[in-house]
Length: 284
Image (cartoon, rainbow, N blue to C red; front, side, top):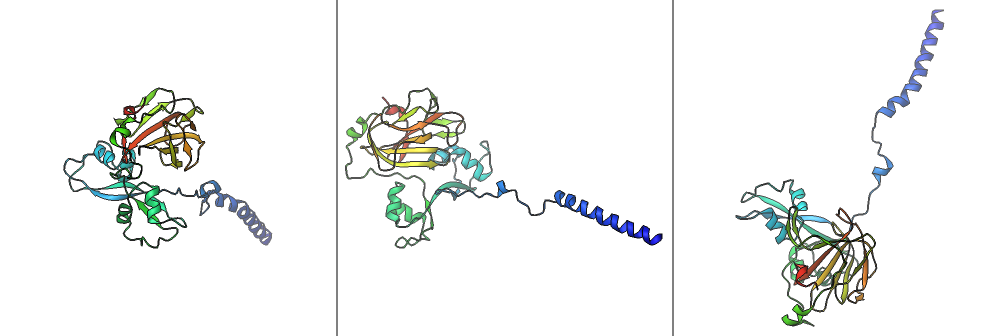
């Protein structure tokens, strides 16, 4: 009788172990990674990195944001500080910069032309790279915008440059003007419009960029005959291709909410000699 009781007890323990085993396993996450969280997105071609900057007397976060053409929010996040943080002389800050990945056939000269900077500036920012033998897949630092002279070939006189007037990309209300605002320096105009509305080229020119940029979302950049450039951001879709010639008033994209935005609108910028200017100076 005693042996029979012991046998029953052993069988019962085995049955309980069989049932409890899966329950215990379910309660212990172990190394399990849900499928959705295990998906790795392909990185964008342009990555955000930084350079060190030593704070000098008189520096402010807003001034640095404007000088290096970076978003104030990105500057704050990269340095884990707030807008009200006081800068002390000698402190080292991280200034966000961009990079690009070298593709087959690309050279320093081609990349400098692509990103509208001088070859010297690109080489200086990448002194660890051999300019004569760029390796495919190498990551190059794209330095901050610099003061660039308008190319000599086809350069208009000052009077001709100032004569070029721009048309409005959309017919909407301006929701944010050019200049300082609470979040930092705003390098263009935000013009509200319904999603899907046509975005029109502000003047005749050539498309030098069409694609996705961080913060800006789907973006089109056009270079005009006088050397100026116009940028149209947050598009829903892009209707032109790089190197395409466009006419003033031609539809180049549709209004959207891509990138960092709270509603459908066009972020419109005008660049002169590599620096943004108030678009209102040129809009008809």
